[in-house]
Length: 319
Image (cartoon, rainbow, N blue to C red):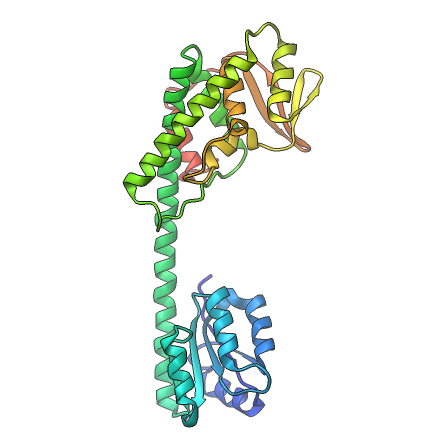
């Protein structure tokens, strides 16, 4: 929902009524009598507010305290101060420190007030459009990153365990998709393309080392009991008859969803390593009380399963 309301904070009830009557035709108005009330309104309705207008001189906390609070916790709200001529120095300081977009002098001149608020609402619309575009861009970049990680895991799996590696990764991808959205944390302001690729390459190398270590620790596979016990011990699951119960899907999602620059851990690699060890001959199902892993026949894989997994994990198609 696009924010479209104006929050006006002033300790004078008459000023609140006058402001609401003057500005109401332009946008819905919410009012508050103090900085404390203003904070409460922001907590409950921050996502609906496009513009915050605050009087500076009020009993108790000054308006700049609320404006500073809004800047920290609701940075997309356009912040404005209304103040008497004698307080213009404080308003200018607030502009210079980035606390407000501009100030409105008291007493108000109707056309000037409406023009300033109209400009503030238009700025809020531009910010909302910018944020939506940035959000879409970040989703696309995250989707590309997940696709790269899936491709890297296929290469790592093939290098470490050539036999049945694709079946194992297919089961891993199916489990990851069933586990819900996977969104690696990425500070895109920090990572340029070359640095990100370097970090991911090093991460892939560390994954290969951990998977190789797990395969050595698992040793030769003899029977189903041994295989299920090995999984329960590796990922902290509970052995229940012919299955292993897991409390969550982290064994199959953490490896894909780890933050960029974070070193892969042995725990993150255990699920994939175990699937490679059993040649993908396992089934992972979501249950009401957790996740259930059983041994099964080798999967039948569609020719385009990897492309489908890349798209679905990246959030580009339902499922």
